[in-house]
Amino acid sequence: MSLALHGQFLSIERELNQSHLERPDVVRSLLVALLARQHVILLGPPGTGKSRLVRDLCQRIVGRFFEWQLTRMSTPEEIFGPISLQGLQQDRYRRIATGKLPEAEIAYLDETFKASSAILNTLLAAMNERIFFNDGQAIPMPLEMLVGASNELPEDREELGALWDRFLIRHVVDYVKDPASFAALLQAPAHPAAQTTITLSDLKAAQQAVETVDVLGVLPLLGQLRTELAKLGVIASDRRWRQSVGIVQANAWMNGHTVADAGDVTILQHVLWDEPDQRLAVAKAVLTLISPFDQEAQDILDDAKDVYIKAVGAPPDAENDAHQYEAILQASQLLNTAGKRLGAIAKKAREAGKSTAQIRENMAQVQAWHHDIMVNHLGMKEEIEV
Ligand SMILES: Nc1ncnc2c1ncn2[C@@H]1O[C@H](COP(=O)(O)OP(=O)(O)OP(=O)(O)O)[C@@H](O)[C@H]1O
Ligand SMILES: [Mg+2]
Image (cartoon, rainbow, N blue to C red; front, side, top):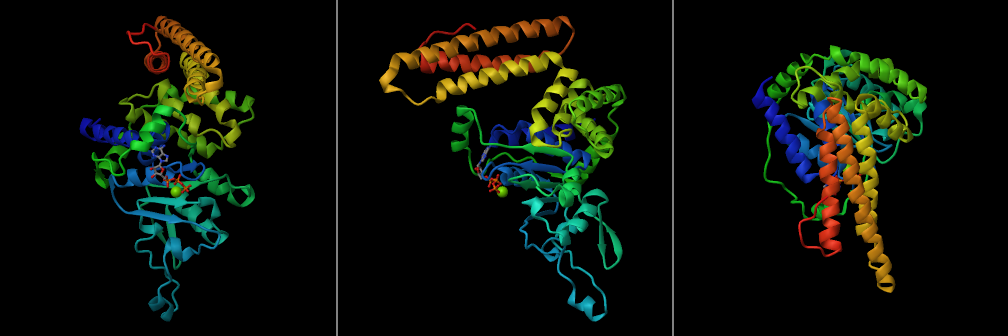
């Protein structure tokens, strides 16, 4: 593994996480998709930073970037280029694809599911086969990754199902939740200073390295996962399972592994769901199978987050000061307990010879919330012991 190359990818990940709040999984997925030559769909309401995140990533990849916002009226010319008039005079139906999708290494299609049937078939071939038919000639496309964005899922799965299936990694993004991230969002610089860039040949070299990551050891886990998900009625196509292997390899590479381990498989929680309401169940099944201790720690973190946000986000209640004080005090006690429970899980994980990194990360987060409540909301000054 080239340390310099790996370091560049990690720098880009760090930079993107600095300016995009509460998006660590999406940032990781975009990099993994780039490394595995796959496509990502971002579903979410307007103003969740989808476009900016993709642009910020593309700025760091030296290559051709094509971005377009589709409408129901969009024509193939907008995406694949206009028909050559000169060609028409010679009875040829040739598109001039300069600056359009057929020549792009990375593409971002906003409102992807508005694609009309005139665009759809060409798009499907572009995404799967990376081939563009121009005047009957099959032209190979340099497309590394296509990112789609949409405010909603396609309703007409009949027509758009094939497009949906081609987005291997799927994320639903929402407005930031944590008040601290919200405060950081308001202050985030419009143009962050640090910008690591990678060239296309760097990307190719990294993709080759990714292909050599040994995944044999985790393949049985994928089989078990398939069985577990089938019990929940979640069925992914065989194409998606096959392509998942590349995603695990890329995630392992990002994690600095030459041999993939179970933790590297957790990214598949963003691959294996089909309907948004399956997301939680799929994530739970993946984590429970792969790292039961992490799953338990995640549940505690989720509950603690609710407690914290509710406590610090409540509007001041002048009428009932005592009541509010009590609510905050109770939140502080709950967070204290959550911290202790995480400590106990870390101990169990350690005794079982499992990694405690994620659990300790969750514990640090819960302690930070507890500390914030004690110092900033209950006015305690001394060091807090949790
Ligand atoms: N999680 C976030 N972290 C940092 N900035 C954010 C975040 N969410 C939104 N923003 C801010 O909101 C701005 C607008 O976001 P952007 O236009 O990328 O949203 P969008 O999701 O693409 O919206 P639309 O669906 O309307 O296209 C960004 O430039 C950024 O300043
Ligand atoms: Mg947008």
